[in-house]
Image 1 (cartoon, rainbow, N blue to C red):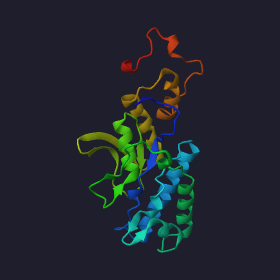
Image 2 (spheres, one colour):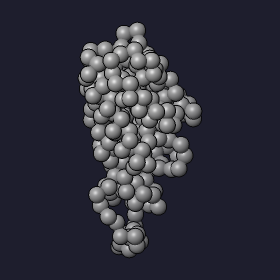
Image 3 (cartoon, one colour):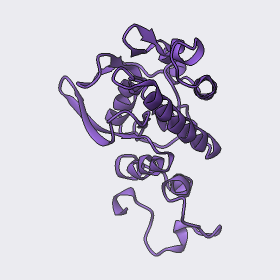
Image 4 (cartoon, helix red, strand yellow):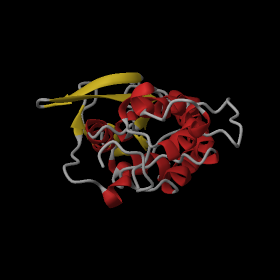
Length: 216
């Protein structure tokens, strides 16, 4: 059912492969950006929210004439090879969302990047289907917050973020756009409000009114 929160493979976060755009950055700045990106990936993994990637991410052009795999594995720059190696290892551990891509998933053009972005296209399609999916970006990328994206006559809001704690905004957005089932409300709340502690016996049946998404 479109918009329903369920256990099927539909990741909540995808890596925006176009954010590995280091064309205007010196090596030191690119290295710092990758270090922070690694920290966010590690934090999301520890929180059981490892982002998914497009299986073609390594072939994205990160500098003129240089694909990402050259930067990460070939020592083609002065970026610390240990930082690059860690980025490659973390990305290799991410599941590929396009192994089970939904019909109609196409890359999306963004005005500030020269390539069409497959993972943003996935997040956009999910948004059109009333499912909240956010895009993790490398910190040197300027894309942040909810952005209104469009293709032809369709438009939807997609969240871009660089810091791992911001993932809670994806889950909070789920309450606004999805038909979150009563049995899954508190599972979503665990990620949406990680600082809150819910009593293990808390159930909507203890309240006078019945559970209804429209009452949230």
